[in-house]
Image (cartoon, rainbow over all chains, first blue to last red):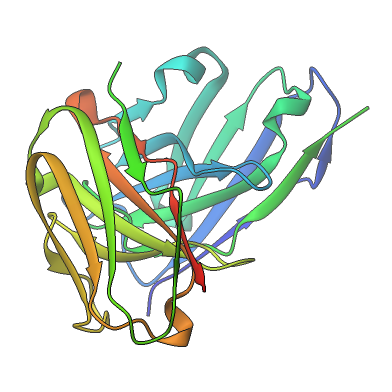
Length: 119
Length: 109
């Protein structure tokens, strides 16, 4: 059974850096073709893809946010970390991590974590 | 800029009716990389369809995907009460960038 769970702060101040951790089980991020991505959803709005890291450490970012995002993995700990710098109230959203078994879609999702940006 | 447009924004139907949801790409895309998700309030999205027409594990056969080029369709043959939700299409495109559509809400008429 594949599970993912996001963790991190629920409240951050403007200009601060957000660090989110995705702990997963049921698959290995060292398996060829596998990736873990981050997707966010502002309240009442659509899904917005942020970043993806592949089994071979290849990383992809949303172009408009690339300068603010960093994604890393620790295969031995089964975790993926996303950092986003210079947080702004418009970054308030539920942040999801998700498992991509074949690089083209997300078959398994975490429950999401709501991050509010406010002073 | 690559964009996915979904229509209609909201679809009001009754249980038992057929739902037809559209996803249109701003340029021709490979159907291999087109997926559909269902999201219910307060829940994470769930993968329904990948490769434009392949059902994900555990997805009932009343859900079907089709299309090619720029026009793709998600069809729910007979709506069950649990199918009222928001549906997103998603494309995995050039440079391994993912794009989601704005969603179609299917609500009860």
